[in-house]
Amino acid sequence: MKQLIKTSITGGLSCLALTLQGQTHDRPNVIIIYADDLGYGDLSCYGATEVETPHVDQLAREGCRFTHAHAVAATSTPSRYSLLTGAYAWRRKGTDIARGDAGMIIRPEQYTMADMFQHEGYATGAFGKWHLGLGDKTGQQDWNAPLPSGLADIGFEESYIMAATGDRVPCVFIENGRVANYDASAPIEVSYTKPFEGEPTGKDHPELCYNQRSAFGHNNAIVNGIGRIGFMKGGGKALWKDEHIADSIVHHALQFMRRHQHEPFFMYLATNDIHVPRFPADRFRGKSKMGVRGDAILQFDWTVGEVMKELKRLKLDQQTLVILSSDNGPVVNDGYADEAEERLGSHKPTGPLRGNKYSAFEGGTRIPFIVRWTGNIKAATTSAALLSQIDLFTTFAHLLQARLPKGAAPDSRNAWDTWIGKNTKGREWVVEQALNHTLSLRTPTWKYIEPCNNAYPIMQFEKIETGYSNHPQLYKTDEDEHEDHNVATQYPAIVYDFQKLMRELKAETP
Image (cartoon, rainbow, N blue to C red; front, side, top):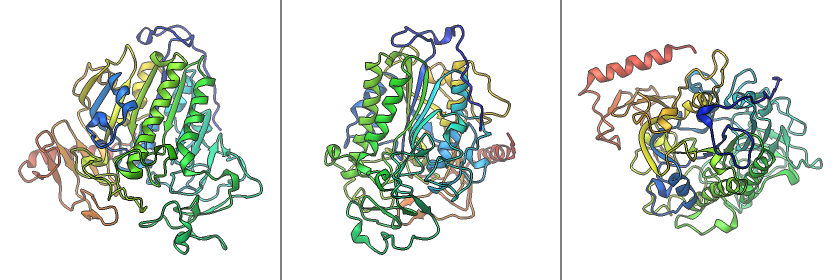
């Protein structure tokens, strides 16, 4: 296990000088609010008209809203891996969508963003969805005892997390390395290979899925009247109720903020919304025009409001850097019969973009991205600069003047000048990773999608355009934002340049 040493904070950093309020130090708190499957067009400050997100809109008014920001991948696990390590997930095997019983994907020997904050004297905490594995080996966790390796080994002193996603077992929270509210009378067993004898499944007993039924898949273990991926036995009082997940995550996040209000803290708050199964708290049900998916967006907005309200109550709002974003693009029908597709109406989860979660098109990785820090980020601004979430690590290191170990955050760059508006163009290019590992390169004016051998144009059940093709694709995105016209044959020299850059990136060994 890593040595977790808090270094003392000595002296002031002129670039971080702030008007002190509730704290006695001169470094900003940092909060990342990371939504799940929230699309570019799902927020009213990004153009949504069928749902209102006043708390996110207020955050945007107090900071800078970016319109060309990208997650590293169009799916959850690789995006989160890249954000926290500053390394492209496609360089490493085993970073695809993780099972609920996956072993640790970020290994203890890797230097993470949380390690960096901790070594700079910050309290560190992770709350909500994890989906990056726990324990040493896949399928060998003992969920009835403290896990021998977990988030404490990669820099998070405190944690209250879902092992994977809401639709995967185990359906319990893990608090600081052990099952929260553990019920000794109901020992936990988890399997992703075979069901447990005597335990009903959603496939054989759909009548027991009284809260939400499967549309496809999601018919293994039944927890809280909802079918899941994977098989589970036991849990008892430790099992979560989906309608209370957001409240539980927010409660623990706010408690962390209160405990550390007199010292700098870094909080990674990864919400469960808008991922399936969408089963928000009763007070949000029926409050939107779009059924439970719209209601879940309202619940996410409430989460943002609670965090910002607590910062103000603690008099920390001006001393806290807040970033809001999403792990990938949206998906409407992702396995449950929740009427999300039927009740979508005129709402466009990806706004003007083509594709969705899983896709190589822009809708897969282009996401909301808001940066707010009073006195440092100009309020009520919008930037079209090209951003990648992989750059958060090195940008934070720049702010703290932190020294990173050799080899840490190998693909991350300092984007501070872009955040504050000094650089209005941003990156020269960003890399996007689709579900099937197809890579794309995006510049301010062009988008290149490499050809792939497993090209299938539509994900049948999800009804998603994949963007996968046997042929190179080139789109002039400054004129063709929806990626309708493949002009690869018209610009062979540009295609060649992109292919050359792609080969160089793949040949790198950070």
